[in-house]
Length: 407
Image (cartoon, rainbow, N blue to C red; front, side):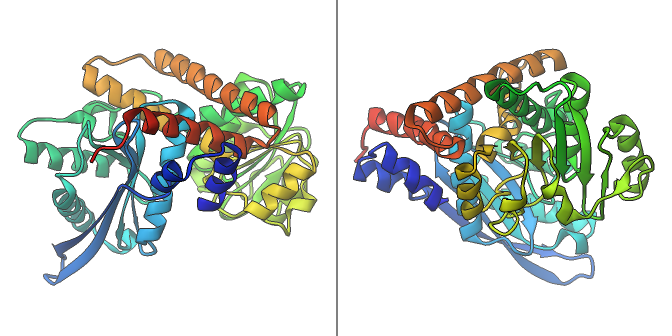
């Protein structure tokens, strides 16, 4: 994170004082969460909540449950959320939370007990105007419902706006599940427009067929007429140069939990996806998938980062130098947090929009964000990732200066 920050900050000639402020987290909270397990024994879990920067508004960021959670990781993710919210031009700062645990080895009751205890421990630090959590790795709408209920019990009234990613029935937003994939589709479409590439019939390869990858593929095929020729997931991959039947593939995945073995396409190895001669490549799986080792084999003209951090810095430098147009994660998948902002607004307003209204507002925000980054890229003659950081840092730095130093 600091490496990406430094490059943009130098171009902006950011003054040393603001530089120091923006490279230090505002607040790091560590809590102990004792839980009585199903076997009667007491376990103590460690939880974190980091509010990296709240200059533009309440902290915003997910809560993850994973054995590998560390304070450093949570702090870096909270910083990335700061820049993502600023790029999206929404009034949030950056936050992130995590608990060191393995939810795959815990019962539903144990996960609920852990969630409620963790929220009780950080309850004074969160709230609709302080810090608004959301789902992340190994957390979902049900866990957010427990977060909302626990917070509401502590403050003595129902507070739906304390968390986003909730079930629709308790204040969640229509369109939230599809939002990140929709944003990737918009970013791919706008990239093609800028490059003079006809998106209708453009060939697309997608790595990862979870929520983001599958919805990106579906919308690119159905709404803008792109041809999805290849998809890989955790188990295998499929390839058809004439185009995959995405509705049939989605039905197949519902039954088999993988694209592997889908009829009407030939098998594709994970490593071969990046070597395909396609117009657009969408990495929507894990981080660090595009490395300096496989970057030279990439033939795509456009890469739209659906996942967080799928491209290493060395690989990004190589791709940029070789003319590949990369839409960075903090822009390409910022539609998720943008629709979380819409959910927060609707909860605070007490008035809910139709899915059509949500999608129209998302379209407008994503196009605004894309164009701001593109114009910055052209102005400074830098790649889109550096431009996104320039936009984000500039917005946070400007308000930091305006607010001044409180002493």
